Image (cartoon, rainbow, N blue to C red; front, side, top):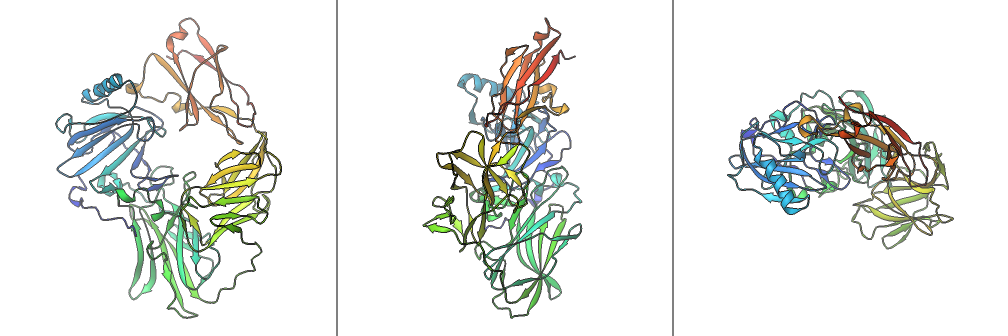
Length: 565
């Protein structure tokens, strides 16, 4: 079982400083669920702008500098041998700071190597830093839109930044509890229950739950800190109510310290088949992974009643509790109308053999199986977006006491070979919205991969893509220290409600094709223009014509560019 460890840094808890020259809400928290890993640091908003100064969190030295196209991007580590921890700053614009030699070193390395990726360890006496010293500028290099990513580490693992006093926000909001997942050995499938919110921090169920055998509890929810982002919680657990004079703690796990060996083990904390990054909804496993249950009722008698409390807690101590009244009784399930899937080894198929899931490459958990069934969009109360038309009835993927790790490979067969207009769509049951799914057209239908539970169906796309302005404050996304005064920069967002836009729209400046760069993080294109272009013309006409993968062409977006003051 992985339970986050205590951190042996109480003596310097108040010594670690804030990493920016201004107050910024933490927008991404420690150990947050990501699609393929966990987020082992904290993110700080830079409000869509590059070029904010970053500051040293303690006295030490710059241990290494690196640059990569993806991942951390431009990053540096500072190290304090006296306190034994390291701080990583990532997604930077540059190392421009009070010691200009560090940025000069980066530029020299790029020139010498002739490429834009490197990793260099530095001597401990080369670049000393003092607490609160300016050591670089925020950016958006690597992966992500403008923000600062900060990590604290020691020789054994990652430390939650919220552990240190300077990072503890004055947070008065309670975590939100959205759903209870209840799995017990007496039922053939899990119960999914939406709790009733009595007031902030207090939730209840409509009625007691009948149970027998061993029970696994999962809670879906999130926390707000000070930004609009839905963040990870700090701790979660389960207790039995009224055990003597106090409640009895049955299980508690907290995101305080995670060893390197466990930093990619999302299953230790989350139900990965239900958790979602966008929009954020995290389903926490409220049980001991070695025992594989939350409550064992095998020694309880018929008619016994007990109250349990499952909770989510934030770093400021705000705790949201869900009271779960439990009664030991006989469970009578409704008649099962769906036939079990056809199974061949680790391959499962619907009775009509139109949908297939192949688990041969996946780790699976539980003694049940996936439920694959044909349904309709109407039966599932799913509204189809405008411009999309159902081609055939969809299929539902659910489970009975069964989970899997990673993306499972699948095949959905169609009556005819799919056309360019037809695309496989996935409706995520946990977040109740359409989300992306990897798929590929074949002569018999679609190959696909999914790690989630939901509805799969083929829709025809007649919805054109579109181009829109960036937010006003993002039209110039660099502060003066990070800007080239001789260049005008513009950002335009691409969008599509159907099969998705292509990343190569036609761009024209005064009727001539014009180059651009595509930004996969913003889902936008960037256009750079020398300001000298306005010496001969006061105005320039910019045109952008978007296309999508279904062959639809959107309306041409136009803007009159003029010289900036």
